[in-house]
Image (cartoon, rainbow, N blue to C red; front, side, top):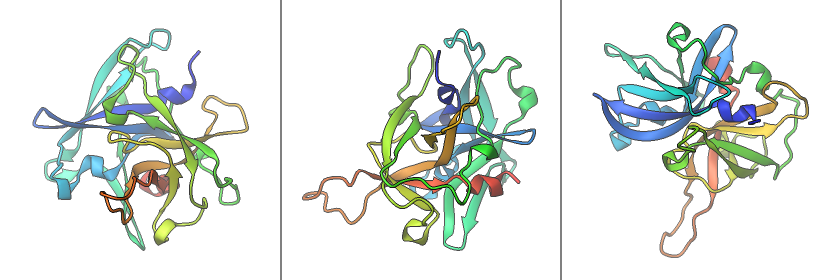
Length: 237
């Protein structure tokens, strides 16, 4: 049996006029009867690098008993000149998280996926110990189990105090080895209670933190920015 967590993540391919641009990660989030795909905002649009896709493509499993059975699902990003995703801002500026609502009537009836819900978010009084082992579940460099189309899980440690806004921004730090393609991956911690998806959703992995590194003298920090998942309560209203 596979862990349900592995069915919560989605491999994202970004496209412009049908041409593949890059790969990223994302995950499903359900609120009430609505279903969203969550990823990093820079996956949808990254003006500094010129990354401007017009659609996303994900793969959905169609048979929980045969994980090699999948179907591709295309998600348009624009309706005319109007972008269809939602992105967040707070008092400190832009938050690198975006959601786009999925048309559930277009999804396969037998889709085998798992979605986080508001119940998977930590409450304000819940504590996460510094150094706690977290998982980042996604598709580094687009890598995956090519037969079963499954993600991989990387270990990361909580590297800053959970609940504090690092640099006054809406993210915390993890200490772990990450790569391009993990942008938008869920960062989770095992929950102490059982359930269909027994994980706490702590955040959304964004990028490696470079710091003031002299590339000729200093090793990479190995630290990553993870945006707090409670932004999803605003973006899915």
